[in-house]
Amino acid sequence: MDQDDRRLLPSITMLQCFEAAARYGSASLAGARIGLTQSAVSRHIASLETWLGKPLFDRVGRRIVLNEQGRLYLDRIARPLSDIRAATRDMLGHGSGRVVNLATLPSFGMRWIAPRLPGLLMHDPDLVVNIAARTDIFAFADENFDAAIHVGAPDWPDVEHDLLFREKVLPVVSPALARSVGVKAPEDFLRLPLLAQSARRDAWQQWFALCDVPFPAERAVSVMGHFSMLAQAACAGAGAALLPSFLIQPELQSGALVVPVERALAEDRNYYLVYPRAKLQMPHFALLRDWLLEEARKEEGSSAQYA
Image 1: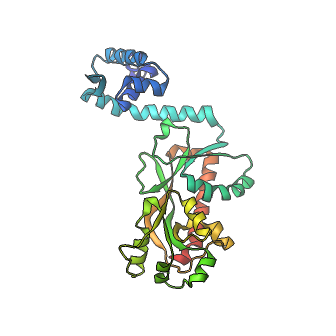
Image 2 (image 1 turned 30 degrees about the horizontal axis):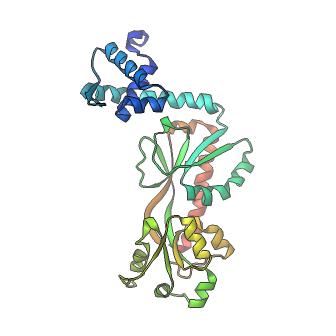
Image 3 (image 1 turned 60 degrees about the vertical axis):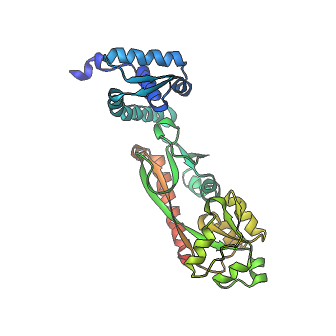
């Protein structure tokens, strides 16, 4: 039978070197990634080409570029290699499923997950949740993560997307500043210093348009790089800020920030839990997933008043 024919199964090292070189377009970069020298990677690729009796790359100067045969071969072997890595990582790292490694956006992890985590761990003391900050989309097969928090469109390749909630951005201000200016209507915000996150410089313009209030073209808006800085500045009375509701629940509950005008800017940004489907077979991951979805439902309910 073909499945027992060892001539049809090149070594994993050959396949790994080929796949890495195809991804990076360089034997030296591939070697740095997988822990081999450039010459070792080149030798393994040459051995694979000899094994198959076909060249897989075209050499362009110092670069290597997949040829048509190489692309066809990569398309067939990339997913099986990914599945082997994932299965082996699960067996070696946490075969019992007690450890869950979660990648998350820094602000989301600090402001939304961390304050809620003790409740989950009290429910299941055996669960170990490791949280690391990541802002990029990555291949789960290449990373030691079971799941990630993704914001934007459901466009993370080859994973499941569980919608947590849709982002609602609220106009917030310190209560002292709100009282001093008498903020009661959308146009009153124009009498305050306006603060925005650097990636959303036009957020105030959008919010005023939503409220049918003309926004002066020359109106200055101070920008900050991180939402946490923005929240602290607003709490200190530096001005009014537009902030996602999930980030500022502690400040709203304590009264450090208030929402004088309950009109939310619904951004086209959704928050998802993403993960390879096979992770659902891990009982402790399934518990974490269910808990996140339940907490997200509570979040949606608590912010419904600002819709």
